[in-house]
Image (cartoon, rainbow, N blue to C red):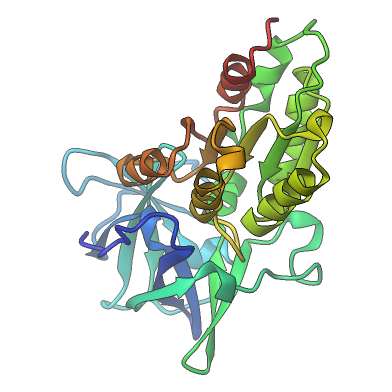
Length: 301
């Protein structure tokens, strides 16, 4: 799919593909979209999850199709205008059955409103942000959460942390930028189990950068951040913009930076490399993340 994906790095902008389910508009980050196809015949798979319609093979790859209306518990009438949005994230190729595809919008992360606790209770909602566009609301869906609810094995592989037993304690100051409260909790707990006890959490790139600046102004070398871990997709300021600001500041030029995101594909890797990320890994690989931190900060187990 020719998405006209942003070629610039660190602009704090993204492109959202708008589509409909019922009478409502929803969105997905174009960076996750590989292709859009007219709905085609799907082969059912016995005993699969109710939201899984089945599988199909548009070319040489078998792809799982998820009925997004069922996943969202929305009743709709199917028509010949229905579409399949084929995505790639967390190293998975998955198609989502939607109704109409309306177009692509280029917006700033600063214009995305994060749902409050009345909607995102206990971090379990499937809406990551809301956009007001042309007098209507577009709900950006958490497709990772939707897939995780269907197949929990796609989430963080926290079981890998159990293999990291009997490690010593390490006071390396780690800063994490992650907008998902649930993922932040899982990542922080995993790092603590792996021996990293000095972890500071920020809900987005702006909070992370403000924290770095606060410590710089205090000029306390004992509190200086020694490793930055950031997601890419975050309201207010995304991970790429955060890295750009960090690398442009001479004070942070040598700070090790890890991108830990579901959006680790070829396009995103090139952006991350241009911006100066040291390492980029996909979110399920929490055990791999610990090993990479060990190498960057010199933690000898």
